[in-house]
Length: 375
Ligand SMILES: *[C@@H]1O[C@H](CO)[C@@H](O)[C@H](O)[C@H]1NC(C)=O
Ligand SMILES: *[C@@H]1O[C@H](CO)[C@@H](O)[C@H](O)[C@H]1NC(C)=O
Ligand SMILES: *[C@@H]1O[C@H](CO)[C@@H](O)[C@H](O)[C@H]1NC(C)=O
Ligand SMILES: *[C@@H]1O[C@H](CO)[C@@H](O)[C@H](O)[C@H]1NC(C)=O
Ligand SMILES: *[C@@H]1O[C@H](CO)[C@@H](O)[C@H](O)[C@H]1NC(C)=O
Image 1 (tube, protein in one colour):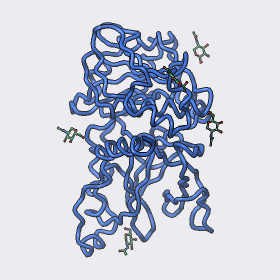
Image 2 (tube, protein in one colour; image 1 turned 30 degrees about the vertical axis):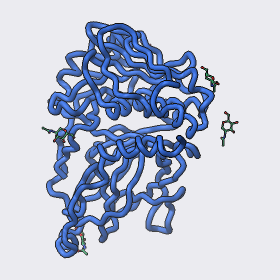
Image 3 (cartoon, protein in one colour; image 1 turned 90 degrees about the vertical axis):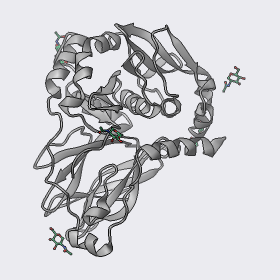
């Protein structure tokens, strides 16, 4: 039961985020293009979350100044999982990866997308180091599969993260030369633009900023969501085993449609795959006290879904009842709740009914749905 459980789920995750599905371009046409983009760097994303954040905080805490980004960054540092913003620039096309940031529209960079990853090694769920080095002229990042990126005058060490083994998302890292630089964006067909496929990086979670047209319903439903959030307190896992089992329970969660028919409890020991995943995470002793509880808190046709171990809620989302969300999107939203220590409001993407949008850390994000930056 040990290994196959996780592999089965990995395969499901990989299906949604295929490494790349591109037919390979001929080598000559590839090298002629030499690491290009199809368009100038796009600016299609929502930049208007600040006002909403103030309203949300006002509704939740009667205080619009709580929950500033700096407070999140501080919490994130004491947490094991933080966001990394991938910024893009042209001439030549390249990325720079910024640690502990949701967005990175700074110093000439544009936010391309965001991933989260473990900052501490954990032999059970985050065993492999990747470091990011920074280079100059032009400024850029480069990943290497080791702890420290310092390499003479070529690269200075910027940061290290640990790739996730269980429940991960994968993205191809593409390279081009002169100057040596990289590009990563989920599902990007780098070969068609003269990039060389090097390897696949594996991380905890991945999403992009949502565009305004994608989040109209979510914004309109804010009052129902905040009514629920007021009644949920998220606890920080008090040891590494609880954190691992929290991740395993989130990853093992079935797809749940919250119905309006009262409280629903899924005992951890009965959730398909969870006992095996908990064994892999060396947290079997917590299986009997683990559960997923639906609709403990409700408001105007919206309900909560909570991940509970012992007496603590480790992650929660609020969601419209009868909205059916895939277990993958649900897992992504719950990971963000556990990471930030806040309930996360989730809704359908107004531009694409197979995707979801969420409000995380003062930022509107699109989870799954199309990866649509025209790069
Ligand atoms: C609002 O939050 C800020 C920052 O945490 C705090 O300094 C201030 O006293 C709070 N105001 C109220 C009315 O609670
Ligand atoms: C690749 O492109 C860069 C920047 O556009 C340029 O400086 C370099 O000479 C090109 N390299 C090759 C091999 O064409
Ligand atoms: C696994 O968990 C047990 C406690 O449940 C602990 O004693 C043991 O050291 C852990 N194993 C490792 C390799 O961390
Ligand atoms: C969990 O509970 C079952 C009985 O329901 C018991 O047989 C089992 O030993 C318990 N497991 C642990 C790890 O406590
Ligand atoms: C909606 O998202 C799915 C999944 O990413 C994608 O395959 C589909 O093309 C998208 N539909 C539209 C209309 O953008």
